[in-house]
Amino acid sequence: MTDWLTPDEWRAVALSLRVSLWATALSLPLGILVAYALARWQFWGKQLLNGLVHLPLILPPVVTGYLLLMTFGRRGTVGQYLDQWFGIVLAFRWTGAALAAAVMAFPLMVRAIRLAIEAVDPKLEQAAATLGASRPWVFATVTLPLILPGIIAGAILAFAKAMGEFGATITFVSNIPGQTQTLPSAIYAVLQVPGGEATAARLVWVAIGVAMAALVLSEWVARGVARRIAGT
Image (tube, rainbow, N blue to C red; front, side, top):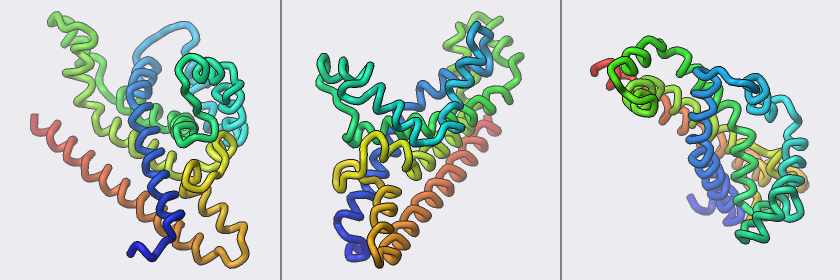
């Protein structure tokens, strides 16, 4: 089985999984907060926040990657201080690939979670509040269990998007084998070489297999959560 792909190709697969998991895990708390704010709160600039959240969906991915480079590169407006003060460098590192993937996947995550929150009857939350529960406690004990399937769906969507991210990633962190070359970048690289179609096809099947496994897992987990909620 290990001979099916070369070591460099397996590294690209492993790096994609690593980047996608980190991108999903680190953006999930912020995604829940932003989704809740957009679904429940009224504040100045709400439409602006909504537009910023969804901007990566309508911008060309290369533009998003360029903006990340200008912001988080070593000489970027934020990146220079991360480098000087904390020694953190994101550009042309796998951590930068995780950041790019998180930015591109964030709108899908927020949308799924927001829809789940909007489906919860606000009267349930109000009833808990009238009994003396604080807002964080209401969210933890009433809202969160009800929106858990939506959170799972949003996380899986984000993971799948991160696995397939290419344009912003290659612009921000380039395509360095063993360091920043993710699965989509590896597919692109082998397609530039004459006779690379067979290798590309194998990598494509790996990508399809990972995506299908993630979808099946999410469906299984979501159904289990829904059954548990229905039984309580």
